[in-house]
Length: 350
Image (cartoon, rainbow, N blue to C red):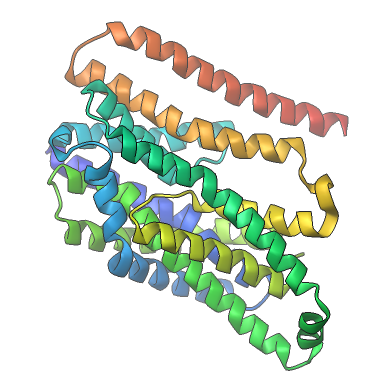
């Protein structure tokens, strides 16, 4: 029964990943008018599944056995880890703070590892280094690419009437590439603990996880696609290609090495890089930087604390560490509340 519940939670988690992060990958193509909503979602779901099937294995191994040993993952632990990750995302949605599913998944696994003192610290530090470097790399690449786009040669090429259909097709292809990379990296967040606990084999986990991520794109992705599309319509087609291509390339490389990385933060950093090349330092507003840092810090900490608390209470029946960790949890929510309140005050004043 516990195994069935764990699988249900994992696949539900997978569908929500598809409906949020994966569906956003086609936002630029849809927002620019290059493709209609229904077709965008259909192609995105196919690309996500193919990405998971052909390239999701390494990240699944990392989540399932690269952060803590497989001996740590019992059926009960896997169930709690997935519940903690899903609950962290739910609570963050209440506070209006976007979290990275990759960071949430890793944090929940680390919480279990802390209880049993079985965390592979070297591997965890390597993953956290990627969390820092990948958004920075995306930011720098976007700046360089923006200056190249503004060069005379590129502007002449773009001004040719025949260039518009080519750029339109390229934007769609880059969106599919980004969806493919999301499938490679994000399916592990939902099924990695299930594979680590031996509930599903790696191949079965990838298949069912990829399938439910794809289903999530079709059933839950419409609103995210609409929101993302409207936000980015001011971007030029060539800029959209840079953003999608940069994010997809970085996530694909990370996936090959089995590193779970935050696609949302990478894409956001690319957009900021484009803005920096256009408007200079003024684009680096404090609230944008604070939000990125908040997501980076809160995502893993929140799920880690929840996972730790649940295991101590439900499995270990140990209430003493819960007191200290509850203080940490209250502090996290205090930070979230303060950030949201500050944002509302700014909106009212300005």
